[in-house]
Length: 116
Length: 114
Image 1 (tube, rainbow over the protein chains, first blue to last red):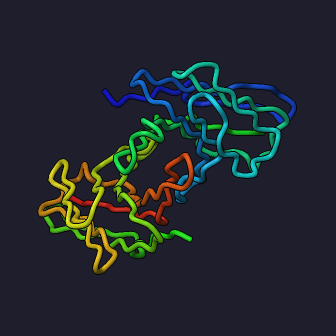
Image 2: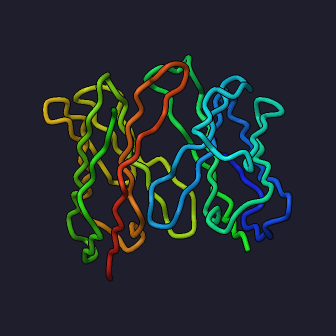
Image 3: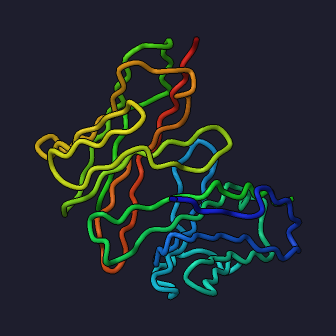
């Protein structure tokens, strides 16, 4: 089973709202990722968690706040977003550092976010 | 830094045609190579991968061979179907520090007509 689940599937929010995206995997993976994907573009890495610790933050604005409550869950808290933040937000997971060259990221179906 | 170059698209083929999508890479280390596919309205799915030179990844009739001498990982399928219509991303993973970051190509849209 290589399933990563994401909720909600779609989200519409105003610029003053606070919302959260959720990602879950039960593959025993120890690395989890958030990506942002604009239409007709490849995904752009936002954050990486390794063993529940934030290891990479790709200079993402503070209106995006990640959280990894345990090894299976990854959240992305959203606050005061801008219309240009509208995109598909993808979560991924992988075995992590000890997998070496065999480390492979598996993606969820994404949350389609629209900021009004 | 690492980079992945994919051929320009979009590509339109008739059903049962032969498919080749070119992918070349630049990396300082010894990357793993991947093809991901994104169907309309969905997330990315791993299509196939290769972790060392001369490895051949294959899945669902698609194949790609890791060619170190030409730094390439071209995707091929002998007979495409309408259901193969999607966006295809070539990617590499070169371990930097504690994480294996993915570097993606721009992606190419494949449309297969009946």
